Length: 294
Image 1 (cartoon, helix red, strand yellow):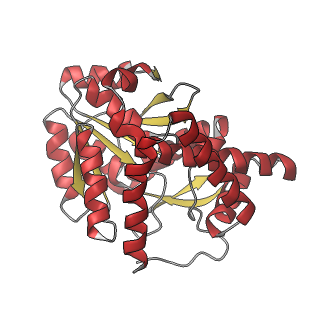
Image 2 (tube, rainbow, N blue to C red; image 1 turned 45 degrees about the horizontal axis):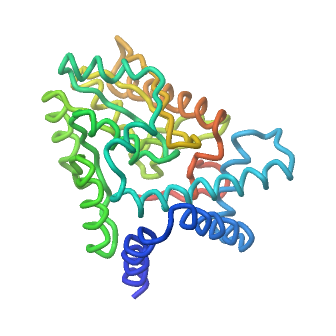
């Protein structure tokens, strides 16, 4: 029942929000963000806890200001999502700025394929749509949502941008490796994996777990691995790419550990500069009262 209610809310959002004048739609979502901050539910409490770790020198007042900005950024993402189907290709491309775009485009031109690891920040769908509009074949993965019809709606939404979306299952790494060998861009959100397969890293001075997938793909396919931090601008989004160096020696396990730690450092850099755009409303660190997931 709860899953079906959530689905109906999302479906209504895709319909109703698109009818509203743009300024009115975003103002409404910012008011929702402010309401959620004042309500101080579990997700907001987790966001506050996460952001406090990114800068221990923040005063209580500065942290509360950041929480408001972060929730508004998060709700901007959802307003974007509901309105995105009506955006023109021109709007998609002209509202994106990129630092070090050559890291990605040179790999695409060389047909080596390229892996992009990114955190939950800004509007990563907008970033992906930008490269799809430029003719870059983009492949990503999606964890199945409940109910199924909501998962299919998000699947259709991303496929409408030109992305190929693969279900997250036991065969997905092999399929992604095949796409890389065909010269595609493989984009993977990679800032959280609390399962036993997650790789423990030092993240802002405390233990966290992040997925091994991007590192394994880079080692096994020789495709370059870069990180992307997506942040909001007044007009749209900015993407900051950085190259991840692949170790030349060591066991696969040792190489994966080193690569994932380097990826975490890149994420730290982006989050430190634009913390309000990091949309992490879930647990990420494994200290304190953390309980193991299967």
